[in-house]
Length: 120
Image 1: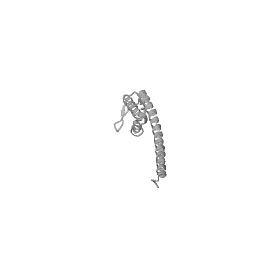
Image 2 (image 1 turned 90 degrees about the vertical axis):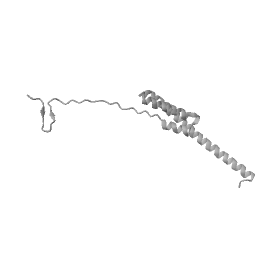
Image 3 (image 1 turned 180 degrees about the vertical axis):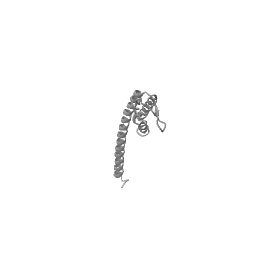
Image 4 (image 1 turned 30 degrees about the vertical axis):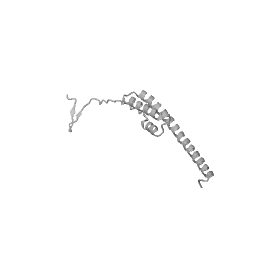
């Protein structure tokens, strides 16, 4: 008695139940390293060198991510994020204060020039 039969197209017909194998592939955890934000803060808003320090921590986070140490990468990325936030806030405050100081100095200069008669 023959257990396996071959149908017309050449496929093997079996009476045994089909088995399946399930492979669970873990999702890759995304750890943002904030390198671009750190580079922006380093170039444009480097208040108290916080942008540069944030850039160093961002590179460390990227290195940790490349070797598979997600906990270390998250730690360095969190520090870089905090430093980037402080650099951004202090940079914006500096720009506002410098703008106000410039406007006040310009107004005082115009007033002195008008009082002295050199500016009409």
